[in-house]
Image (cartoon, rainbow over all chains, first blue to last red; front, side, top):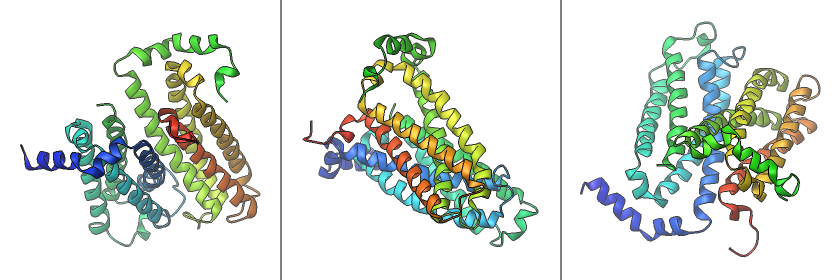
Length: 161
Length: 170
């Protein structure tokens, strides 16, 4: 048995995990919070992506759109991460064996790398972007949009398979 | 309240027998694909709604006026809503009898109707009467968020009916 599988099996039998899984209210309540967080995080991230791609809010300065939405995207992501981690803890073995969940984790890591690239590898001064959007920034927006759509799909499919 | 008290049973049975209804119920991938589309568009819809409501309440995108934001967001909100309805109706048809008897489903539709009316009001008035942080703007923004919270909660409660069951644990 691989070390990861032993860890997952152990987690699956911890009292905390069993309580989350077998409790009447825990799972649906955490899941509802997870979905509400989705609106705040994916909903706001999507606007930043669409602005970077020049598809939506074209008349508003890029730096304005990013600066004003970022705190909400981060706040929503924190809610998503905590509630998602609890959902994972409630059925570790099921998540481990589900292909959709494995794909979701890979896409989350790629999305994190995308954000890191955006903040560390692209110029901090975004005032020039309103005249000429650098293609690398557009790519970041496209990757983010595709990855988050994929993450939502894979998340939903974790429940089916 | 449930819909089966308002509409004849034959309506719900008829819905299940239409081709979209039976396709989703019997197809191997149909339900999963349609519901995934529904949830994907949900992210888009909630995103446009939340950004607009927060603006009215004086949070988030504040440097743009409600009128500017409404003109940016309205086409996205309405097209996302249209996609929600287009994917939602076949999902309803596939289990019309169960949903017709579901209390949470009735409240979801009620909240949804309220949410749509409030948003039509917001977009209609944004051009003239709604300033950021104005009394009316705050009221409409808060009502809209509450309605969508109601849609989300009662929507989840369709799958977990006890979420809206107040009383001893069934």
